[in-house]
Length: 249
Image (cartoon, rainbow, N blue to C red):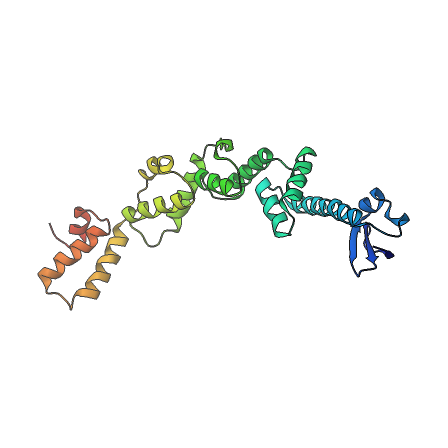
């Protein structure tokens, strides 16, 4: 294949125009390695070898750019290169090279990810671990050595302060679901919920009045009282609280 002309584009990229209409975009590393500025034609074997070598460079530099923004796991890099269209052999060689140069390490990535999650998010250990597994980290390599007790306590206190809806019983259930969703195992917080107590008087009065207003025209007095008692009990109020608000003994 005859080489028609060369054109330098970016700082380290050349375009080589071939007689058959093909335009090769090559890094200057490739140009130098194969002395292309001195050649007037390429054999098919040279063409394939040059493309293969340059593809590896493209993959390498693309990976460097990708991990320069933030630390990545090997799986993230692999998926990024697959999305860019590189074959498995090129991806494997690229990852090996980046690892050998110290730019890619699942161990360092894991520790960095855990530290960021602990200090920059509300996520608990289960959620952190699950996220790492999805990023290709082996579960046996995940070691979250941190005391989450104070963090959980702050989350509970924040929820209590902002509570405008739940009585003590419902609030505890809501807090448990909230913490589980954030990735905290039940055994890590259940003892802290034992101390949660709010003034339920305003909540039971509100709920009683809402139920009374809604159902007073549907049931007669005796049946209405039984119905409201049952509803309040299911909301988590105890018998003493229900008796007090309904003026019963």
